[in-house]
Image (cartoon, rainbow, N blue to C red; front, side, top):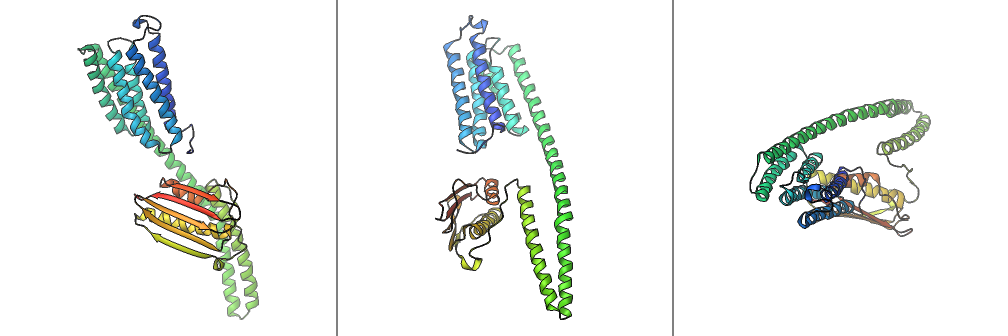
Length: 361
C-alpha cells in the first residue's frame, strides 16, 4: 500500500466525481419531467449507475497506487465519454444532467493538468455534446447551440483560472524559496562560517608554533581543533536533518573502523548523468550507514542495469535493526525524486538488506 494523503488534488477530484454522480442520480430520480418520483428510464439509470461504479473504482485505485498521473490521464477521456453518454440518453429533456458531467470533466482537467489540456478537453466536450444532441434529437435547436456556447465559455473561464493559479503558485513558491535561502544563508554565516574562521585562526597559530619549534603547544591546539570540528560536524548534521524535517540520531562511530570493514562492489549499468549521480550518491550513503550503524565485517554492493531498471542492492552482516524502521532520509528522498522503489529488510544480529529500483529512463 502506498502512502497518500487526502489533501492530494487527485483525491479531491475523485471524491468530487463520486459526489457529482450521486447528486445526478438523485436529481434524475426525482425529476418531475421524467413522470414523477422514481420515473427514471432504465437506460438512464444504467449509465448513471455505471458512472457511479467507475467513480468508486477510480477512488479506490488512487488509494492503491502512487502513480496518480497515469490514472488522471485515463480518467479525463472517461469523464468526457460518460458525459457524452448521459447527453445521448437524456438530452431532449430540459433537466438533463449531461451539462454538469461535461463541466466536471473540464474542471477536473483544468485542476489537474495545464490550461492547454483544459482547452483541448473543452473543444472535445463541445463537439461530443453537439454530436450527442444531434443523434438524440435529430435536430440541433438554437437552445442546444447556446448550451454548447455556454460550455465553451465555462471551459475558457476554468482554463483562465487554472493558468492564473499556476502562475500564482509559482510566484508563491519562488518567494518561499527566496525566504528559505535567506534564512539558511544567515544561519550558515552566523554559525558555521564563524566557526570555520575561528578554526582557520587556530591553525595559523599552530603553524607559528611549529615555526618556533614549539610542537607541544601545536599538538595541544590541534587536539582542541579536533574537538571543535567534531562538535561543529555534529551540529551541521543536526541542522541538515532539521532542514529535511527528519529525526537526527548521533552516528555510532564505535566498533569496527573503516579499515576493518571489507566492501565488495560490483557495478554494470548505463543511463543518463542525472541518474548516475543519484545512483552513486545512494551507494555512498548506503555504505556509510552500513559502516557506521551496522558494524559489519563485509558489505556487498551491487548496481546492475536490468532492462528499464537500475537495481541497487546493499547487504551487510552487521547488527541489523528492529523492524519496522524508516530508511535513511537522504536515500529515500533521492529515490522518491526519480520515482523509484525502495525496500529495506533486516533482522536483529543478522545484517540488513537494502534494494532500490530506479527507472533507467
